[in-house]
Image 1 (cartoon, helix red, strand yellow):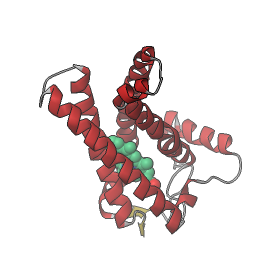
Image 2 (cartoon, protein in one colour):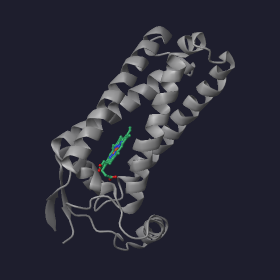
Image 3 (cartoon, protein in one colour):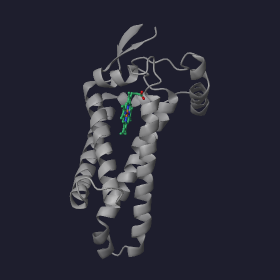
Image 4 (cartoon, protein in one colour):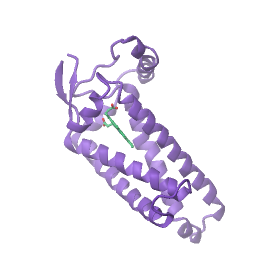
Length: 201
Ligand code: HEM
């Protein structure tokens, strides 16, 4: 085994802040949606909007960090992406239960497998920006109507925002399960806390 440093301090900080903010957004969002009463509609509404700005701030900081450090390269895949994703899916559906080795070995310059790369990229470049955009459309709806937007659009905007929130819940459940499929069930999570992970030579 070899100890490798996979996650820099800012990356770990950003990851856990993002997780806490998204979790709090989901809880306050569900309260605003009327699913339960926890801190009250009014407070949930204000906390939800404040956290949304917090998330936007962290995403902007994270983009800056990934670009200036060159770490965004971890998300690029050489060769046939579909074929590589196929190998990884086959491993999760089959190989993992037969104790087969991971099809892609981790190291300092390649810590994510092709399926993780595409999932995290789609989440960060498509899913979260869409969710945030629809949230802001919803929040500033009255102002937008004053500028000529059709008031009937409120329903599809609310529906898409809610649908994307449920997709985010599905991502988090799947993501946490997937993080237990490393060398040991907790090795990936430990790496996201300390930065270090033990990997096969
Ligand atoms: C709630 C929203 C969450 C989001 C949006 C999120 C997003 C991400 C992203 C984008 C990465 C890749 C970072 C990189 O290598 O550049 C990542 C990695 C990771 N996340 Fe999360 N995460 C969330 C919650 C969690 C939670 C709750 C846990 C564990 C309890 C967790 C554990 C991990 C671990 C261990 C990794 C390392 C790589 C891996 O195994 O995939 N995450 N996460």
